[in-house]
Image (cartoon, rainbow, N blue to C red):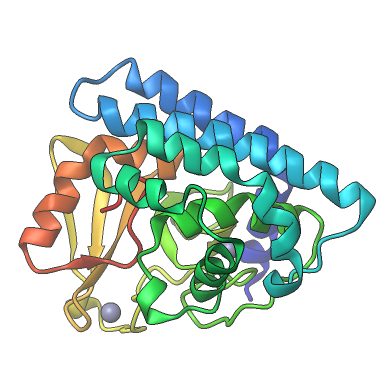
Length: 280
Ligand SMILES: [Zn+2]
Ligand SMILES: [Zn+2]
């Protein structure tokens, strides 16, 4: 690792001195603020604000519970203590989620513990049937954020292009400048624990293609800070928010303002590496 990259990672870590619950609240506030400024993405942003708020409450409850006994990072050992605390997330999805999500969440209300446990473990273990399980991802995020805050590694498979802490898929990337480092750095942001890590700008996080000719970037005048970083080899893409010109956006929240670019990319035959909060 080059020296400036290590410095950047230290600075990113230092900037994250909020508790997981407070960090989720900060995201809720950003989503609520943006929801008040737009008509096109009003609904997804309002729901994001609500989801972050209930995830924050869930994170606070997990943090409280672990004062009695620490969570282990092995979901099969921790899940019995997590599930009873998780109802708020599911109820929020039932009451305010988009139609399909609300239907899925309704099925989970009152579900037998054994089934609820099996669902979470399927997602945790990366089973292909559970890859798109939005609710499991939403339920597990506060838990993994707490594990990260306490330095307890989760027992999940890690692979290149995924989160070095928890193995979660990147759902967004950002470009940042750091003082005297040459050019902008690309960060990938984890969909499961919110971790940010430095990643080669000329490399597909999905298939690791490194030929610049096969990694076209698309932009739109309507959203000048947003880039679609695509790969013609695996036909995947990650959306990127440029923070070098404006540092205010919270990438995983602000990207909801440019869902039209995802719809365009999907039309062009690309699939997002990991869907964002709007489910695409
Ligand atoms: Zn992660
Ligand atoms: Zn690729």
